[in-house]
Amino acid sequence: DQALKTQLDEKDRQRPRLIRTSFWPSDLFSCRRKVALGFREVSLDSVAPRVKEARYWGNVFHKQYYERLLCVPNLRVIATEQKISIAIPGVNTPLRGRFDVLGEIRAAEVAAVLNVSLPEGVPPDEIIPFLLDVKSASPYTARQVAETGRPLRTDEAEVTCYMHSLRVPLALVVYHDKASNIREIAPVFYSESAFGEIAEWVRSVYLVLRAGELPDAEFDTETTNFPCSFCSYLTTCRELGPGSPRPIETLQQEGLSDEQAAALRVEGEKLLTEIVNLEEIGSATTKSVKALRTDLERIVERVGSIELPVAFARLSTRTEWDLEALAVQLRSLGRLQDVLEISTSKVADLVSSGSLPASLIADTRRREKAGIRISKRRRQDSVTVAAPSSDTNDAEGQETLPSVH
Image 1 (spheres, rainbow, N blue to C red):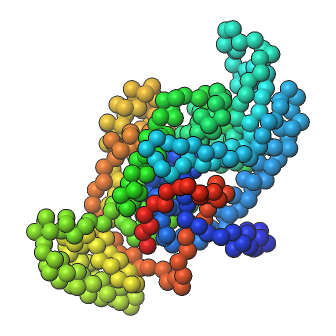
Image 2: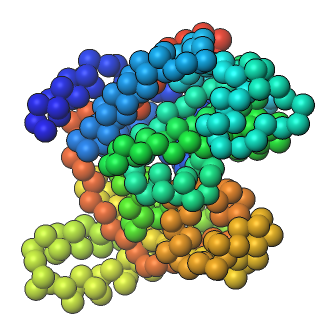
Image 3: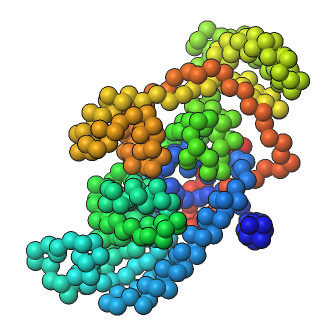
């Protein structure tokens, strides 16, 4: 384990860290704030060794699949690991990625792999171009793909981009279960309407970035294990809070003058400093801290946040789901099994797996206040920036989005 960690850390140090200049197909339908922070000069959390190891073995699986595909009868491998670039109307920042495998195969072979009959009029010997995308997966993901026969929504969107760029009608997403070595194969057929949804999602992130702002958090960073626990921007996201900080104009509309807001902030900073100091002393000061937190919460409710070099205080929220409305919409989509099993924990599983449409999440999720949250800042000697993919190398002619420090 230590040798592997050392090897991976060394590779990280050798690669320069740059601010991103393009959207990636692997971003699609994930957390909008995470994607947006990749375009910003903000601090990155250190990557956990288990995540580095997962990435390492993912590369090993890909290499093995490439070698074996070359030996498959009646399959012609045309290209592997090639870059694509897509221009989205209304978006001056490109969508760039790299597909795994582009190949050709007889129609009869595809039907055998998918265990389906050929459509009427399609001869068995017809050569069909297709894309193959390999994913190293957990047993949970592989089991879900086996039950539904469909890839995760994020993976389906990714290969849809590649199909759009290469004008290929079919993609096969292969999920390799790392625990059992069992493969689950899910087909994706190109859909113009599906690509239209992708373009709208990219625009929704781009327009917020163009305005110099950041999207709201799409997950509860305090309670969600996945995907927040794997996010390199978790600390920054917690500091930002669930939504964008309220501007001075909003404070004035609520009846606070600049002088009043400044006075409240000074009082709040004193309270926050005292709370941090008391909490470091020990549990004997619990009652004192509780009273101070109540006073600080009242101030934070009016001015939005209190910031110190060593800590910050914001209002915390929790996610509540309108299960009744969600069940109605799932029923209209024909997802009766999900309707029968609907519960808060079931919804959390559906959200984390990416199998719920973003519009459905927005319509049925409610944010409720959960009291004040005080977090201590990490001590950092320098500022790091987001690590690039190889897709970000060619920045010529691209628009640079506003930088927020």
